[in-house]
Length: 165
Image 1 (cartoon, helix red, strand yellow):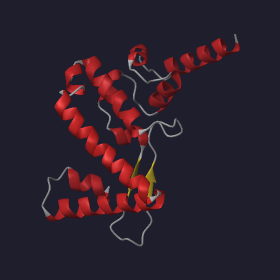
Image 2 (cartoon, rainbow, N blue to C red):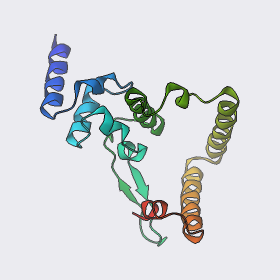
Image 3 (tube, rainbow, N blue to C red):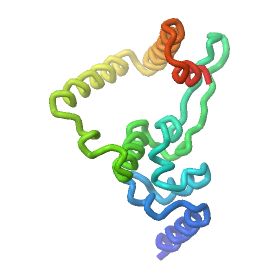
Image 4 (cartoon, rainbow, N blue to C red):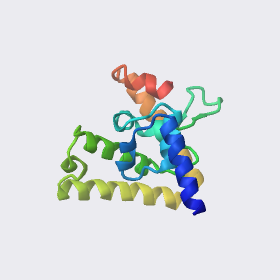
């Protein structure tokens, strides 16, 4: 009975924030998450579908000056222990619900899926073998290199500001 009362209170809070009922239809989204979404002006499935993964999980801004500290930007779902993959799945499922993409778009043909997952597994196992500290510095180096390469190559204006903002 106490759990039922808590759930009712959470649902009432969600409604007060103006979060649409159909947000509950997005796989992985909980009532507590819907409250966090509402507090951050994500009130409909379309609002969620419009998000980038970093909007939900946060991101780290790496300064160009290596002596400066990196800045951690909080995501809407900070504190929910939501992984990048979880957040991406919620966003993509919202896009399927809206018809922006199809279920087939989420499930690539078997040959492509095998090739992609093999590459990801190799990356993860390499990072784990070096230890966590090495993995973090590898990520920093990769981010810095990617940003520098994009800037030198004259990448489109949308990418360069995101990397430095």
